Image 1 (cartoon, rainbow, N blue to C red):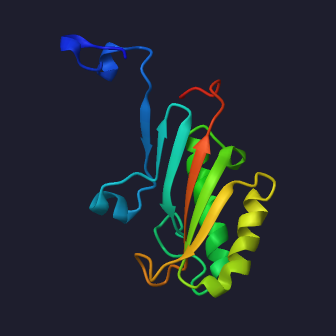
Image 2 (image 1 turned 60 degrees about the vertical axis):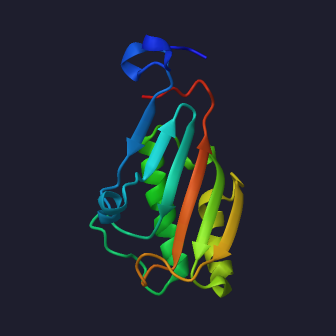
Amino acid sequence: MLLGLAGFPPLLSECDTCIMRQNFSSAAKWEDIVGYSRAVRFDTRIYVTGTTATDEHGEVVGVGDAYAQTRQALRNIEKVLQRAGATLADVVRTRIYVTDISQWEAIGKAHFEFLGEVRPATTMVEVKGLIDPRMLVEIEADVELHPAQTVS
């Protein structure tokens, strides 16, 4: 283990080769209330928090339409991945939370349209509700980058 001053792990300012953590915000109103980031990049890994079908103004897109909401959530994930130096092709796992599992085929169709070639490990589970009752789908994504894809 690399040690810094006083025998403790080094601060980022003490080490040019330390793994860097980057937080990415979407400016969603809930980020400041709850204290989270849309995505966190740590070395070659990116973790995208539960992402819903909101537009750039924080409004829910596709109210009542699970397929449209899944597409919008995946577009939002794609945008933050681009900012973090990745693409949907780098996704290794998704978790899909849905308020009505009977809509699984529509949700799965949208997931396939964005990630069908990638085929990440995925889980779809029904939940009682999401943070806004108009939201039907929330998706998390985990990314693993090739070590050559360094933090930009």
